Image (cartoon, rainbow over all chains, first blue to last red; front, side, top):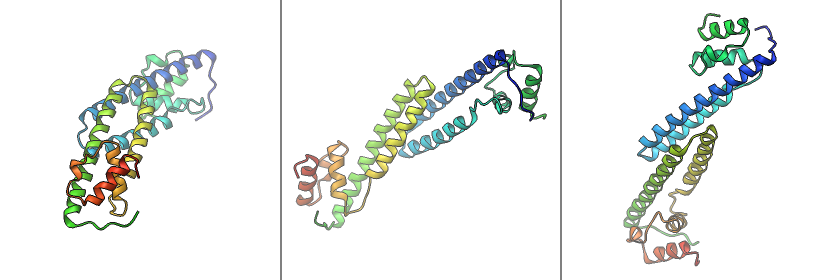
Length: 108
Length: 108
C-alpha cells in the first residue's frame, strides 16, 4: 500500500474514530466478561474466563495500532468487525475512505 | 519438619478437607470476579481484572499442593486463611492437628 499523508483535519477525524472504536469494543468486552462471570459456577470456569481474557486482551493490544502507516488497514478491520461506521470516518479523503471501505468488504 | 506418615483414614480426611477448601476458595473467587466485573466501566477496569485474575490464579495454583510432605503446612495456611476448620480435619492424628493449629496461629 502506498504511504498516505494525513492532513491535520484527517488526523482529528482518525483519532476520534479510533478512540470511539476502542471504547465500543472495550464496552462490549466488559459485557461479555460480566456474562461469563455471572454464569460461572465451577473452579474450571475461572480458568476459562482467564484464558478468554488473555486472548481478547492480546487481540485488542495488537489491533489498536495508531501508526499512520498502518491506519488504513486498522480502520478497515475495525469497520469489517463493526466497531467503526462510514459516518465516523467522514472527513478523511475520498481515496482513504474508498480504500477502507473496500478493504473492509474484502474487495481489494 | 519431621516427615509424617499418613494412614488410609487420614488420607481420606485430608483429601476431603483439601478439596473442600479448594471449592470454597474458588467459590469466593468467583464472587469477587463477579463483583469486579459488574462494577467495571472503563477499559482500564478490564486490565485491572486481568491482573487480579492472574495473581489469584497463580496463588491458588501454588497453594494447593497435595504432597504429603508439605500437607501440614498447606493445611496450616488454609486454616489461617479460613478455608479449613478444625472440624474438617477431625480424624487426623492429634499430633498433626496440633501442628496444623499451632502453625496456623503462628505459634510454632
